[in-house]
Length: 161
Image (cartoon, rainbow, N blue to C red; front, side, top):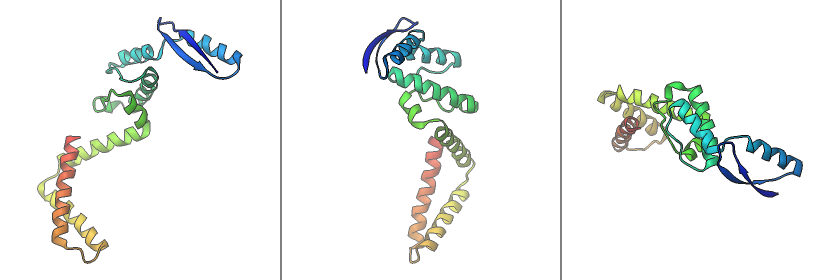
C-alpha cells in the first residue's frame, strides 16, 4: 500500500492510495496519468448529453455519470422526467430499480390524472371489502372512511410526484 500524487491529462492533481505489487501500482499510475480526472470526465459527459452537472465527490460524480448515461441510453423517454443532480442519489438508485421507480411514478400519475370521484370511491370500497374479508369483525363504515382517505392521499401523492 502506498500513496501517490497523480497529475491527470486535464492538469488536475489527485492523491490516490494504491494496493498490490509495485509493478501493478506503477502500471495503474501510468494509466491514471493518461486519463482526465473524474470531475472532468463527468463534465464532458454532461456537456455531450445536455445534462445538469452532478453534485458529489469526484469518485461519486464519475460513477454516477456512468450510471446516468446508461440509464438515459436505456430509457431515453425519461430524460425530462428524471432530473436528479445528486451523485449519491444516482449511485443508490442504480439502473434497474431507478427505471422501475420512475416508470411506476409515470404510471401512477397517468392513472391518477384520469381518475374521477367515482373511481376513487370504487378504489376505497375495494380496499375496505378486502380488509373486512381478511379481518372479520372490522367496522365497515370506519374502515371505509380510512380507505377513502388513503385513496385520496394516493391520488394526491401520485399527482405531486
